[in-house]
Amino acid sequence: MKVFITRIIPDAGLQLMKDAGIEIIQWTEKRNLSAEELIDHCKSVDALLSAGGNWIDKAFLTACSHLKVISLHSVGYDRVDVPAATELKIPVGNTPGVLSDATADIAFLLILATSRKAFYMHNTIIEGDWGFFEPTANLGIEIRNKTLGVFGLGKIGFELASRCAAAFHMKIIYHNRDHNERAEKELNAEWVSFEDLLKQSDVLSVNTSLTEETKGKFNKEVFAKMKRTSIFINTARGPIHNEPDLIDALQKGMIWGAGLDVTDPEPMNSNNPLLQMPNVSVLPHIGSATEETRNAMAIIAAENVIAGLKGERLPFPVNPEVWKD
View 1 (cartoon, helix red, strand yellow):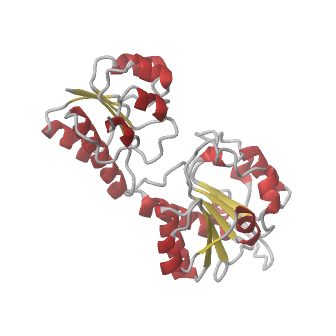
View 2 (tube, rainbow, N blue to C red; view 1 turned 90 degrees about the vertical axis):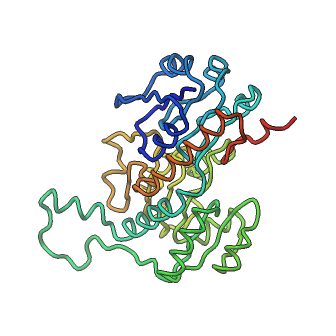
View 3 (cartoon, one colour; view 1 turned 120 degrees about the horizontal axis):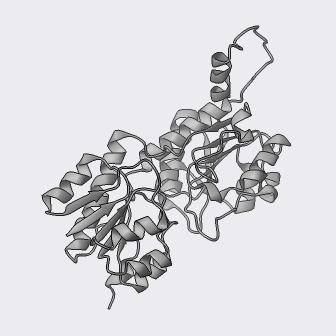
């Protein structure tokens, strides 16, 4: 059995597959595979472990319908045509759970960095502008005792909310399709309508999946309903916010600041105006970038590959309906 891996992944996952007798073919060039290259490589293997930004669309799946399993080195699966994979009886696996702490830490970092203009002030040192002290210049805002609003309070949202509540005594409100009883019990979190989430949040964090419903959800109309003193945080997926609308909202003072670990597109262009704004913090999608988390992701991705090649149910399936009669 052979697996094609689209990136260099941690040895922890590679060793698991080697121990299971799986032959590994790994893409090592530091460039994205084209759609044609991905198909060509996968025609001669039994499994795909996708660790990059490749689209696993219907064209790919049709061309590689022989694959026994597709394993993602990520939680998100918005680049996979899951219905098409299911129709072809190809199980798709992801890596849920293990990213929650690391991603929540990044969201927490962005809240603090944005509220104190930390990235911008750091750059003033590099540019030689740390000069005359002005008591009224470059002031941030405090988040203690303010309200954190979470759009999509799942595992990551819960971890972020717990940090904000414990460290800064923030009130927690959230908007989900369903109530999060654990958050309500342990954090006194309050479910509110989407409109109230916008109106009440001092910090609004996006922690939901990218779907047709959430794509472009945060646009100019939404930003206009938020507090002028609010901070927008997105560590989920870039297309959930409309980036030109976000830039406009910040320039016009509709909201106070923004912290992003995800952008649209990725990579972000180096001349993007967001990078020059004092009250904006941008990171290059590093939510899961710790040794511990990436090792755990590699292990889960490998376990999905191994199970799929054995014809067994994946430990972390995206489309469990492939096993239904």
